[in-house]
Image (cartoon, rainbow, N blue to C red; front, side, top):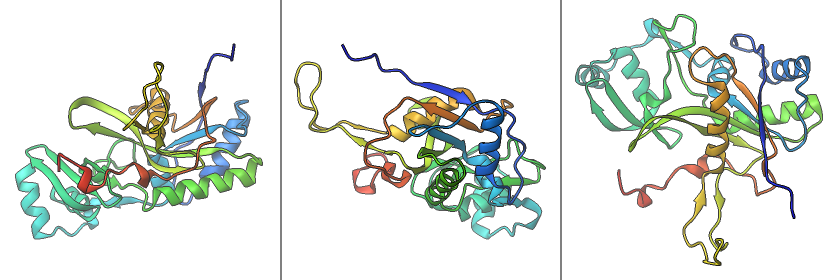
Length: 255
């Protein structure tokens, strides 16, 4: 009888508050060694997009934002700070939904989310600045994976995660916005179920599942665990990118 499948997750403790230009890979390597959590081949490291954005200098001061007429009009409609709305529009390709207190956009990276992923929580001067998502999370994930491979001589998967709401469910879940060294999407079509029935449409948002598992530990409030090690899952499938998870417009029945 084959062994029962199992996986484990560990939060890397004592990650400091990240500043622009910080070497996240070296910090993670140092803190994992200090905690006795040695990263190994086949592990998946899930890193909060927030610390990647901070290291990449993606924090915008609201006092320096010039508000366009379009942003001013949308701010009045949604009752939001016009400077925030301007940043949201700069990060978006289109507005999906807008009403008082709510602004949902299609992000320039292809996914649909509230406020183009802008965040004011857990950042310095949060009332007067906002944190944007990394410019290219897939590239950031690949660079961090390569840096950790050089630093620790291991081959791991790496996911940059964010939290998104869902249109038909209450509450946030973790999602992968940057992926390297692991499948983002697993196509199960052609496999059979327990009764031999052939799967016709099943595709698994694998990187999103891993990101959500990590979010059980990293949290979204004051937990302070932005880097999670996931161990014991399959990383052998063809590697992908977070862009694989974006539904094509022609296949989207709700936009």
